[in-house]
Every structure is written in C-alpha cells, then in structure tokens.
Amino acid sequence: MKTKAVFRALTAVCCAVLAAGSCGNPWMEKVVDPLFDEGTGAEPAPVPVPAFEAFYFDIDGKRYGTGSGALAGTGKINKAALTVMVIVPAAAFTSLPAPVTAAGPAGAVVTTAGGTDFSGPRTYTVTANGLSRPYTVTVKQASLIGDGSNSDGDALRAMIEDAATGSVLILAGSFGMNSYDSVNIENKAITILAPAGGTLTLRATEYGTGRIFEVGPAPATWGKLTLGTPGGVGSGSIVFEGRSNSGEPFVRVNQGGHFTMNEGVTMRNNRSYMWSQSPALEIRGTAVINGGTITNCSANNNDAAPVYIASPGAGVGASLTINGGLITGNSGGNGGSIMLKNDANHFLEWNGGIITNNSPNYYTPPNGYGSIYIEGATSRHDIDLHGNIAD
Image (cartoon, rainbow, N blue to C red; front, top):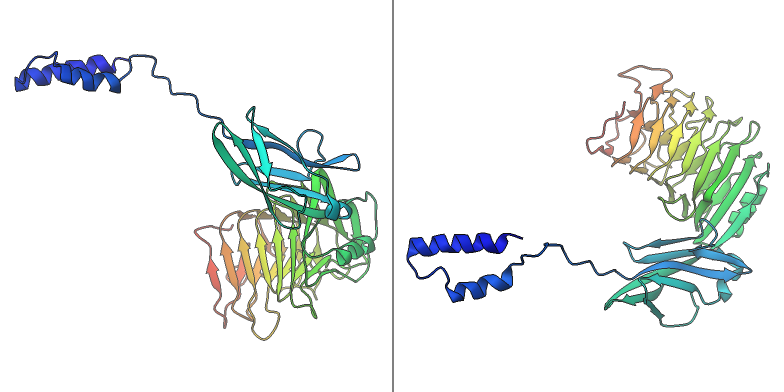
C-alpha cells in the first residue's frame, strides 16, 4: 500500500510549515511504522465458526433428522438461531438411541450433558478454533403416513383424535371428507406438515362437508392447529380443494381456537351456497396467515366472503393477522376475499402479503368491495393495514 509514503509526505509538509524540526523526526517514524503496512492490504481470513452439519437418529434402519441419507422433511439445522429440530416416529420417542452428530470446521468437538432424554429441549455445544456455539436441540414425535389413495376422512380423524397435544403429523396422499363430521382439534395443539417434495390433499367431496377442520369447538375450551412451516421442516404442499354440498369453509376457527397457515398451504376451488358464509376460512377465534394461497373460492351468500370474520356470540370479537401469502381470484357477496361482520369489534392486521384480483358477487362500491369489506355500522373494528393496499 502507498499509505506510509503518503503519510510521510504529509508529515514533511507539516514539519516545513510548523518549522518543528527535521522531516526525519525519529519520534514520528516510530508512530508511523507500526500503524501502516505497505503490503497487499488483504484482510486476514475469518475464523470458521463451529456449526452442526448433521444431526440424526438411526431408527429401524432409517435416519430421522438432517444430514446425508436422512429422510426428507424430518430435520432442520438453523445456524443463525443455533437450533436443531428433529421429528421421529411416535413409537420411538421414549427410547431414542444416541444421536449421530457431525459438525464443522475440521476438528470440531460436540459435547452434551449426556443421556437421551429428549422430553424437553437439550443443549449440544460445538467447539472449534477457540469458539463455542451452544445449540438447542428439540425432538418432536410424529406419525409418518403415506396414504396415497384414501377416499375417507375417518383415518385422518382417528389419527388426530389419538394424537397427544404437541404432536407433529407428517402426512402425504389424499383424504376425502365424505361425511358431515369435521376433524375436531379440541383441547390440544397439532401441527400438520407434508414431507419435503410431497403433497397432502384434503378434499371436500360433493356430498360431504367442506368443513374439514374445526378448531376449538364446543364443548372444548381451546384448540390450536398449525399447517405447514415457513421454509423449514416438512416443506411439502398441503392442498385444500373440492366443492361440498353444504358449502362450508375448509377451516372454521371457533372461540378459543387458534389457527396458523404457513407457506406451502393452498385453499382453492370451494364454493359456498346461500346458507353458508365462507368457502375457505371462517374465523370466530384467532387466525394467523404467514404464507400460502387462498384462490378461486366463491361465497354466494350476499353476506359472505371467502375469509369471513364474525363473532362466536355475545359480541365477542375475532382476530386475523396477515404476515404474508397470496389471496387472489376469489369472489364473495359483499367482499371478494375478506369480510369483517358487523356483530362485534374485530381485529385485522395486515403486515405483508398480497391481496389482489378479488371481486364481489352482488354489489359494487360503496356496498361491495373487491378485496376487503368492512361492515361497521355499529361496531368499531381495530384495523391496521400498515400502508398495504388491496385491489
């Protein structure tokens, strides 16, 4: 680099101006020499940070987790958050073998407190180059099902009823709802995923009910259903489709119920009739849309919309938060995609995502709106769109 030479030239000018002595001032040389380098100026190579590269369990000849040969969709390492998640068969959860781990860079050492009790999160530490990174490892139990051609929803219903709260179900294939009994999520939390690269299809049949899931129904006091995960474990596709005789929504969230829809989930092609309010998502509790798509759903009732927010009773408000996803190509009676019913003070927050190309079936503005219809003659809703615009 030329930095030292430039600095010496400036020093000479200053010395001359100030008449402070010789430009070869030894004190100045001692200050300058250690501070500047006339070499290439290349930055020193960064020290590799220790991190997990693989973490899995060998169970019945299969690898559950992440790493070479592991089953797709059964594990994830998040190096930024310092977490590891592994999903194992429920039958193996109480007697897990020691996990197989691999970490980098070369020479990295993995340590833990020992034992294989994963009933709660455990800490595994990776150490290398004088650096240590503690990872929180969480193991969840799942039913791993590849159905393929099931035309009856009874198997799905029985499996969820038998699952313990906190279970993660990785499902593939097709489940058709050909009766009027929904799959109830009562007093438990359930997560449903599709395997990476796979598809789970939940179909409302012509002579059945469109209400595939009911979350938190009476007499239950609560229920929690999560579909998909944002770009993580089990990142396959979950598809709701079909048209039912009764025209009920694919998912109804009741008071005390909580529903989360993530990436990879699609609700499409349902059509409600005059006695139904929503062909996609009916919210009378709490719902969060982080991703996914709601499309080509039509609510024929003039007091309805594909996403319908209404009170469970006695003026109790419902809540919808939209953080991402796409709501497009839908139609409703007064609102093309989302309707806030004038029966309570509801909450709607739109932080991200796209709501576009939706239309009302019956009315044009000011009595009908393409994407969001707010019926607020007597109720004061809490709405924050954060500058987002629906068209």
